[in-house]
Length: 221
Ligand code: CA
Image 1 (tube, rainbow, N blue to C red):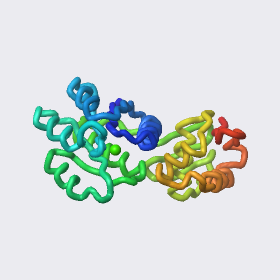
Image 2: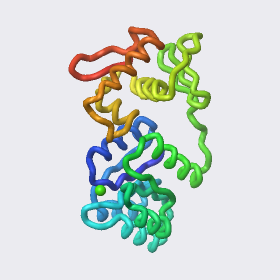
Image 3: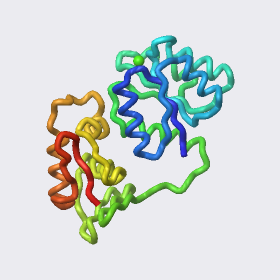
Image 4: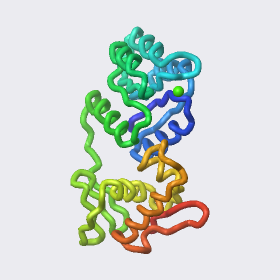
């Protein structure tokens, strides 16, 4: 299991990252200051650092140069604001492995995290399918089977189905699903989650996803 340290002071972003990373089997540690981030990395207990540049006590670039100056080699991915081109360049020069510009989609960051970890670690056997009851998702071919019936899903529908299958019987709120699939900066007033749950019901079977009134949705097994 990989342990990811998230150093970010925006709670909306940290909860968005935690939910997503945990759903993919990562362990997450969240801190909101540069000082805490340095303590944890120096203790040697994490495999990758996601580092916000705008932390309240110190600039993220200082964390980066200090850690690299101490010979710290863990992969570091910088989170930076869209207008922060200069700080991004200096981060890469300061030893960051990659960066991502806010606002970003979870899948984008996940892909970068995986690349960094794959570059460092011996290859482990990758999970390629998820199966719950008679629903099977093939994560490589992006094919979906209900029993022996092949079902066509759009890219977003596939991601939504994946979240449900990773959390069978668990109630997922509209906000969690919105954060996870559409990004934390998406308008919380949108009804897009309801619309896509409707699509999944049509394609997977109308009784598969249950509405839990006042809370959200749950995959029935
Ligand atoms: Ca910040």
